[in-house]
Image 1 (cartoon, rainbow, N blue to C red):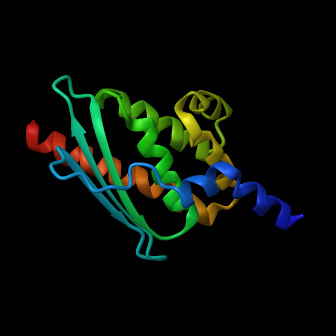
Image 2: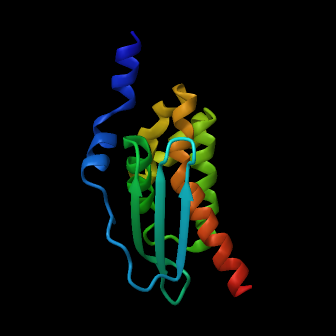
Image 3: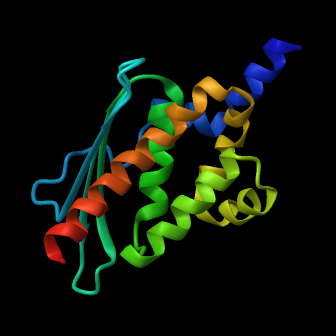
Length: 151
């Protein structure tokens, strides 16, 4: 039974994003950068965003090291961010965090955001939730720093 649950966690989308990460090239001149490290397991995420003249995300770069969940979550997030206005990112972050807490409505809404809803099985493994949320930490850290600098 436990092995079947673990198989469910590593769904095709998660494995695809792990094997073929999206937006993995480092951006040369990002407007926003964010980094997050989980000191307990060594997972890392390094994020770069470029913005267009309307403060929409026009480019995403994301590099990471660590487990499949961390890397797949980062890849999925990088796809979902493209084209979003900075003021829309908070709602996306809230939906992901809500899904990890078991909010069915948040999970349903995330289905419109690409593959992110495939991470829902992670919540059955509490120790892995931090892996899935590490890319959000890099994202929010980067945006918070950008907002503080641009006032």
